[in-house]
Length: 315
Image (tube, rainbow, N blue to C red):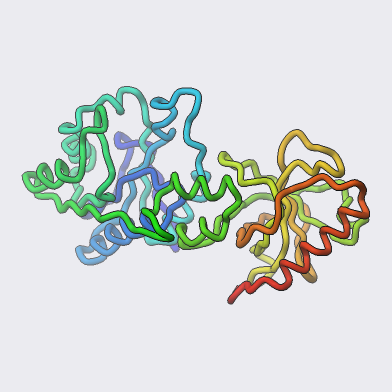
């Protein structure tokens, strides 16, 4: 997989002079609906010998439109980049979202793109995507203007899953309430945490359940509790099965910030300094405070048994 070209805004692209097929959106989570839009752009680029790219925005528009209550994101920019690259995106244009950009008239948006991206050949969006001042721009406007500019405009209908339209908003709600299995169904892959293993207090070893402490501070915090997980790193060919606790550790310290601790089922070659990805598969129970360490150990044993009995599929 070739490195993705990163462009800091439309004014600083420097992209190759090839037909550009552009998927537009926030793409937070890169869920199944996003994947359909991206697949459309990638397929068009391959048909025409062009370049598949994404135009996305930072910060999230809610920073301006929901002052004090911005949307909490599912992914870091680095995680989103990796997910987009895996889907065949060759370039990512990250446009700084400012009040000035938000105030652009909807009718000026597509000409603005064409001005800065003269090689633009096609635009791919979800048919519910809105743009321009007052969010008045829609797929119909894109099609109308695109026809006059010689641009292919593809607006894909929203995908449905588990009884409703797939959206980042819906997935965020599922993650926040701990319904990871349902979130994964809509994402089309596992919700994941990535980070470096850091030294811990070694309490898990005294309980016969050594853990990996992952340095991970998500924008959107999942529900505090115990989860069945898989662990990926460079020292094993496949995933290691495990059970994780995300929370404040009320029995042992009542931490001020939540921490992700992972216990691997079986031998574990990983330790401090290793970079890991932890895929979350299923919610086991909410975090709770136990009377003493003996009670905590007994519950961890039960949690481990739940994880061991979980059907992981092919890792």
